[in-house]
Figure 1 (spheres, rainbow, N blue to C red):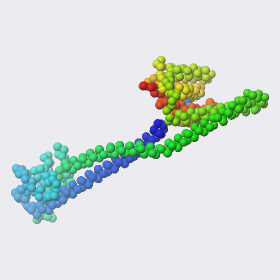
Figure 2: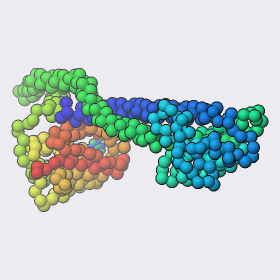
Figure 3: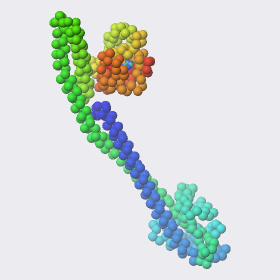
Figure 4: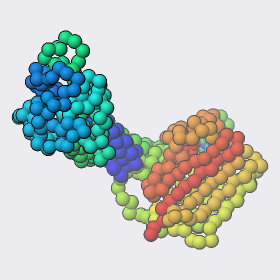
Length: 448
Ligand code: ADP
């Protein structure tokens, strides 16, 4: 299947689509899982801060002094915190008492403000560049200069004998987010590594699945090809004997009346046309077969182009067309079947002559470039509309049915030319503009 271009391309396209869709789904899923883990950790972290703040709040409020200069009392209540404008004794046991059961108590810091927002006491481990100004927002995320992040919770305090009136001050409790961020980074790393691995596996299995999906189609295509080849083969012999009989009738018996003679000639002509069609179909199905040909040789493209130019010169002169060729002085060889290559280029030249009006010109050239032999057939003929340019390589496709039929072509010429180019691992392309002419280019790989 992979040696057949159409199927190989379709399989690849199918596999890519599979991989893209599955990759998209996996990506979205991975992102969703990551977001929900981070969100769950964040909610748990905020709950933890809130619960510590609540415990502290409840145990502090009954002890708060009700005067405007509470420094002395605060020193007694908070022996472990630092008083603003006083030397700091670093023995943070108060916060530790209220954070029992938490893995690392040094993650937390406390700050206390009076009702005007003046900082009174703080934990010695609070972030160094934290502003002494009060920000009353309940939740804040703070980032220090060295990149550490803190989540901070602020709550109002009332003194025991002043509960229903204005606040005594504010309690702030913050938690270091370094461990939280590191955990998020670790999850991101795990996802970042496992997602490409999963995508690779998806791509591999997509390729396999696409092969399984294409299998029956390819099989039925092959059966169809075989049927065409068999039918063409079976039709050949009776048709040949029919043409031979008509020819014999025309030669032997000259005393037919004129009408019978004309009828016999028509039968002979149509028989020959049918015979050509069958030969073309057989050639096409042979070209489509995957078997390696054993009749290939080194073919000189210089000779091929010169021979065909000479061969078609008479036809071109008869059509009033100027036929010229430019052949590279360097000998260009390709590995292939000579008669098929002749057929390829002669199809292009015959089309160019037929679809170019009198006084037009046709130029055939042969050059080599990047290990490719390149033959071009350029004409100044009727040209092909852009939307038809892909289709002209389809079997039995003709742009102008009436005109092509006059020529005697069945619309197989370019399909055969392309199949020959593909069989030789080359390409046939067209560039054309209506009423200005066409340029057909054949690229054939040169042996190394
Ligand atoms: P046909 O035997 O009908 O010519 P082909 O497969 O050779 O079939 O060509 C398919 C169609 O491509 C033709 O019907 C014709 O319209 C168009 N075509 C091919 N070659 C040329 C050309 N040189 N200039 C304009 N049209 C072309």
